[in-house]
Image 1 (cartoon, rainbow, N blue to C red):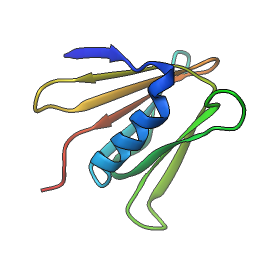
Image 2: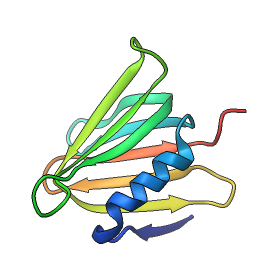
Image 3: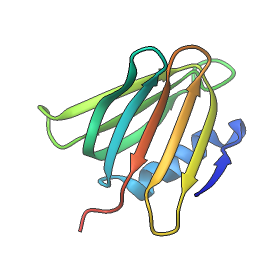
Image 4: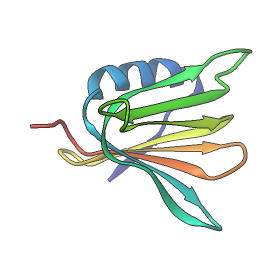
Length: 115
């Protein structure tokens, strides 16, 4: 699996493009807490988008939204991201890991378009 770091100056355009290309694809969002263990936020819900709150001099929070209706929609916010990594196997899932300044990492797994 090839992994690369998304440079901070590309975060906003990366997630704009990523959201446009992967909207509707099944997404699993996990919070990777060292003390409590992994916690599911969403499991195989259609990705609705990933966006930034851009107040100030740098992107200060990432909002990830997935769901398929008002009763099955979740929004997960990651404050003060420090590192964003993408890992992908050809023809396989796409993993995005967001590491914040404090608190647990968030892992987003996109498994492919709905057939």
